[in-house]
Length: 248
Image (cartoon, rainbow, N blue to C red; front, side, top):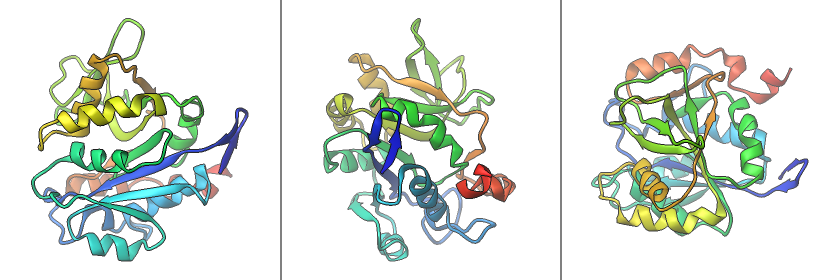
């Protein structure tokens, strides 16, 4: 367990890895795609999470497509199964994970995100305060990416691919507080099957949930949807993908 100046940090982690990953065009789940350093995307994520949050942190993976491939590759993790993975989107996978989570806040990420572990370190203050947040990159605003705007107090107001005048992109790493989790579960349950989880966050915001945009623009992070994204992920300096390397 990680210790901060506020004491021990008790956090649980969810990785969403149930999807078909058709856009990347690989026979295996995207999370099992190998990176240049020989690790799969998911192994890189697990290594990063444990390096920052401690070796005993609880990690649950939501599986669906070729679930046994993921489970056999990571027998030391916990798993939740989205049996309708081929007809639902990330809103329902996150719903499955949060509904079965332990009391307390949950840090979750898409199973195709390659990132510098220092990104998680930078988010520790918000985790320690148990605040709901989304990690954002303000250096890019891609047309096909999830974008956001903020209200007068600086909290997220809109969060979707169709946002106009977006201030940046969500990178696929987020946290819901213990106090907000029940509301988010309700909103995820109300989402359409094809909704991304961001829709649940957006409707939770409409109910009063305050979501902090945590700027992680200074760190390497790539969400791998297409072959070009994998090329970008593999162009990241290998030393920026391992905490023991970047710490030195």
